[in-house]
Image 1 (cartoon, rainbow, N blue to C red):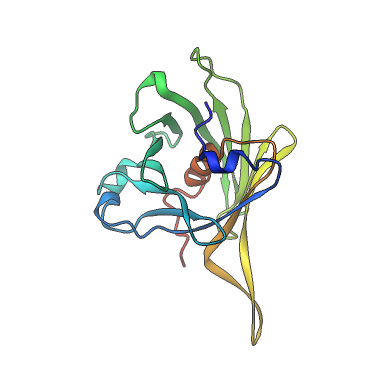
Image 2: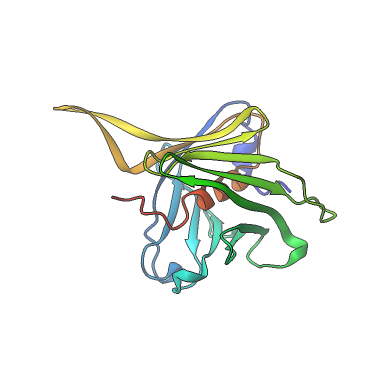
Length: 197
């Protein structure tokens, strides 16, 4: 199921930092600039999550690599759950995972992620996502281990320390090399939220 960009797999023994910002993607994502961009520390595009249709109520998104190749199709069901598929289609044989929200309150949001095996069997819960939309924080756990984590970026200013609200950091920790799946999960966690205020 590994669909990550190969340049990151060679260095999977060190944490990987990606900077997350609002995507400015033209007509392919509805003309509204709806989506997320994931860049490396040099500003090079690594991944982006784009809205597929101009009708935002459909909640169909696709994770693309830097060359605009579709890696994961993300679909939000009417009941508020999500499904992720390999490539850019929604065929049951390409189902990667199901994501269910288990908590949504002012204090935080939580999701359970169930990976679907090659024979179509679904695990009970492989990953958990917990965090706060306001603080741009999302931590992805596999068991008791942290797989990835987002955090606000800070900058020293004349009047003290302030936070950049329009960009945040995603750190993917060693031991889990499927970076595309992690990025897709981050796209699901922040899907449709007012992040840029």
